[in-house]
Image 1: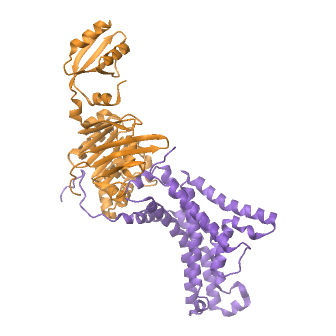
Image 2: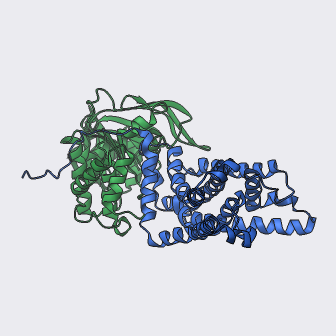
Image 3: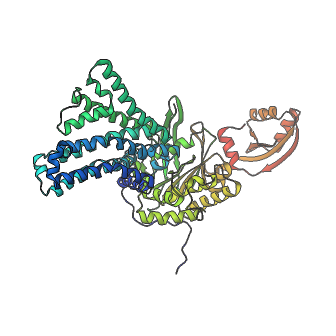
Length: 284
Length: 310
């Protein structure tokens, strides 16, 4: 057996395209979180609602007489999926904080940005890689369980009747999950890029969500109308989900305004990321 | 490994970099040849700014730069795939051990995962971290962190290395080992490198060419041996009396002079002048010459002539 040369050797193998760098960041980050037991426990808790809803769907399909007796409690409608996604809003907050607060903040604290950006990847690829990590886990607790519930419903009922009656449900679930996840991802990554402390970012994120809700509550009482719901990020999300699921609107705010609030939030977040993710900080 | 580069590996043409009102690089034009080139200068000369501009971290307000024949503005990703950067400040990916970190850097540079891991082990052994490669980087000493920075710069087998103050914070033995590694890379492994440092001995030991910077400009450049050969001779001189006044007198006479750390001055006598001129000047200004000895030109002389003596 030859003795392996431990001095420096030139590399004669293949190199992959620079375009794949974002996937390296994403895969490494996802694997890193999936090795943490505490995080797996959080994911399990986030899926708790899925198990409850799955049981409900099973009972509704297997025992029609129970559904008749229980009425709206057991009846599965498109509203069921709307309620599922809105209830998952709490776990979106938790997973965003757990997973997203340190994504860029920890790199800034360890001075890792100069390491990343000295490799053949752009700032956009770095941000895309980090966002993919957070988006993956957010979709894992919104889109995946919602689609699985729909699949279970079809399997338990033994027919596509529900889908034929409500063909918009699948695109609504996909779009609704994406809106929730993208808004949370953009906002969290932007906040993470502002600090070197993941704890501070977590507090800031939770604080902003809570603060906008409080402001909305106060203004609603003062002005006697819920048309000021655009002040609250969660209320704007709910309003947009109402439209996606073809429900009566929860607030008197024009939908366009709620949509623009979310769009502005993502635009501001993107702008913050563009300014903060750099190889060198220039103090003028 | 790509084909050997003919001609300069890095060129700058009238490059200006501004931080607000402060011009860190002022119309800099330079060419860095193949092999080991030292980028020398005092703190604030613009060395790190130049490296960061070449990496694409900073956009110059004017000028053009080429690295390995590629335009920095047009092909930054291609350049960085062939370039390794060892930053001056500490930097690592948090939560990783050394081998995972270096392998990750290799993957980011385009190596397949299996090759990146193999290369990570190899370069970590090469830089002397073989036994500590499974430890978390956050537990490393300063010297070990310097080595890991070199390892992540080498993992993807770059054609050009930027080393920014590579011996920062290292003890004498570690510094010696680091310089040996750098010399080995340049002389035996065919890696072009630009070593940015304010430490003259580091540059003199590892590099064959030097670019001296001062206040954002190129003060001198060329092969070190040529730059060390002044048109004249160099003397060590110690005097009794007002040495500061004597230095001014020498400079008024057109003789370059600077003081070293001890009370010895180094005087450059141009061709045609000799030690008798020094004795004559000393006698004329009632200064007693206590020590006069011919000396060998050093890089310190080059640096002092380029940036101005104290």
